[in-house]
Image 1: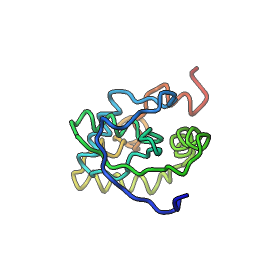
Image 2 (image 1 turned 90 degrees about the horizontal axis):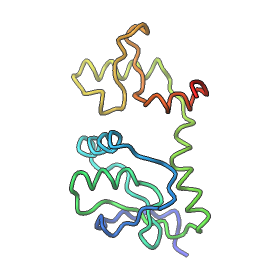
Image 3 (image 1 turned 30 degrees about the vertical axis):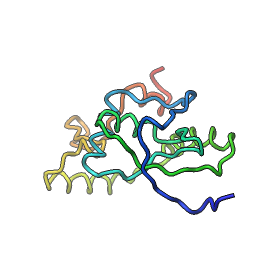
Length: 155
């Protein structure tokens, strides 16, 4: 069994990667466009994660963005050591665990204000300036359905 702590990034042809047919996470065209813009701005910062047969475990949105950009190859990390159950669980965990993180609103506002002053396009961060009654507070861009799901209201 390979050392599961050793990560090796390699490039594979886009057409050789196999999306997980039962991936419960969805990616709208708008979100894929944002991922593509992020790849253009920052480069590849998070490789696609695949199993030993090039099946995608994590990175379906990144692959869709690469296809939109017309890229022939993408960086991947192979996680061949995962059991079938672990792969299925990680498909969910990779997307869900980040949703439990919070924000330090004061530090976030400071960072976004300084980026704005520097002329940086906040859309690349996923945030925008809310000029409404909150007095210019920065808020994440979310579709209304996602906001209601997180608050439990508006169903």
